[in-house]
Length: 137
Image (tube, rainbow, N blue to C red):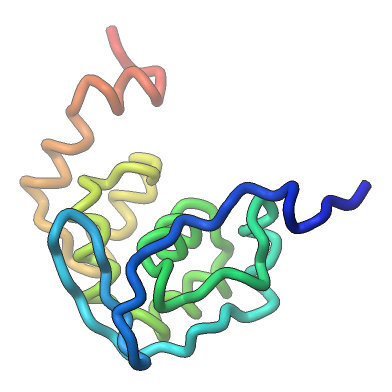
C-alpha cells in the first residue's frame, strides 16, 4: 500500500535562516554548520513517516539529527558526523539531555564525542528515563 504525500505526517518546520548555514534552532540556541539541504536517498527508510522530498537538512536539522541518532544504521551515523560534525551532535544531545536515545546509545556517544560524564549520569538516572526503559524498582 502506498501513501500520497498529503497523508504523511508533516515535517517539523523551523524558521528559514537563509544561506547554506544550518542553525540548530531549539530553545534559543544557535549552532552553525555547512551542509547541503538535501538528504541522501539512503536515509529515506528512517523518515518513512514523512514526505522525504520535503525534508531539508538545513531547516530541519534538529529533527534530522534526532532521527538519525536514534534509529540510524552505521552508514547514516557516518553521514551525520560528516554533515553536521561532532560539535553539533554533542550540542544536540546535551540540549535534549540524551532524550530520544537509549541508555546504551547515550553511553556510546559519551565515549565517542566526549559528553560530560556527570551530565550523562544525571540524565540516565532521571525517573522518566528509568520508567521508559523499564528499570524502576
